[in-house]
Image (cartoon, rainbow, N blue to C red):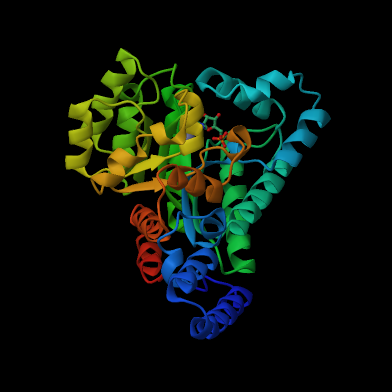
Length: 370
Ligand code: IMP
Ligand code: ZN
C-alpha cells in the first residue's frame, strides 16, 4: 500500500538533496531549522498530524449509517423532488433531538429502492475517496413502496458485490440495524434477514440503534442473544444520554457484552473500569458526539481517556451528511485537538484495525505498514 504518492516522494528526495548541499555552506543550526520547516520523514513524525496525512492513511470505517451518509447534493435533490418541507434551521440543529428530526426529513425524501441503489453507490465512492480500505456499513432494513425489507437487503448485498468486483481498494461488509423505535416483531424480522443472508459473507451481524429517547435494550435483548447464538456479531449504541434510564441501560448492555459498542458517551468510574475489563471496543464518532453532547471543543471528548488506557477503539463518522464530516476530518479534528504526531496517529489507526469484525480482512489489515 503506497502511503506517499510518487510525486511527493520525488519532492521529498529533491529537498533532501537540496538540504544536504546547503549543509556544506550554512551553519548547522540553520540547516536543522530548514529541515524542520520543510519536513523530512524523520521530523514530520514529530509534528502535529495534518489533514493530508489523515486523508492518505489507509483507514477503516466501522460506524456509518446508510441514510446518515447520503451525498449532500443527492439529499438536496431528493428533498426538492419529494417536496419535503423543512426550514434551513432544522438542518443546522444537530443535538440529539435535532439529529433525529433530520433523520425524519431524510426518510421522508427516500421512498424507493432506485434511490437506495444510487445512495449506496455514491456512499461507497465517497468513502473510497477518503482512502477507506474497509467499510462496515449499517442500515435498518425497511420496506419501500411495493418492495419488502428483504428486497432492501438483497439490493444492498448486490451493490456491495458489484462494487467489490469493480475495484480492489475497499472491501465492504454490512450490519443490519434494529431500531429501538420499532417493536420486537420488526427486530425479529431484521434478525431473520441477517441469518438468511449470512452465507453471502457480506452480513456480519446486527446493530442496535435509533432514537435513544425510545425503548431500552432489555426489550430487544432476546433478539441479540439469538444473533449471538447464530454466530452473528452484535453491536450496540449506548450511553448516548446523560440520564438515569440510560445509565441503567448501559449497565444492562455491558452485562450482555456486545462485540462492540457505539459512542459510550456517558459513564462513571465503575462503567469505565467494567468496559475496560471486558475489553469491549468502542466506536467513537467525534463530531456526532460533539454535537449531541454539547461539547465546546474536541479536546473535551472522552477519546483521550480511553486512548491512554490502551482501550480498543475506532474513530468513525456516524452520519456524514447530518454532521457535515468525513472520516479523514474525524481523525484530523480529534487528533489535532491533542497535538498527536503522525506516529501517534498511526497507532490510533492500527488500533481501529483490531476492531474489525471480518477476521480474514483483519489479518490482511495487520500486514499494512503505515
Ligand atoms: P438507516 O438505518 O440507513 O436508515 O440510517 C439512519 C438511521 O440510523 C437513523 O434513523 C437512526 O435510527 C440511526 N442512527 C444514526 N445515527 C445514530 C446515532 O447517533 N444514534 C442512534 N441511532 C442513530
Ligand atoms: Zn450511530
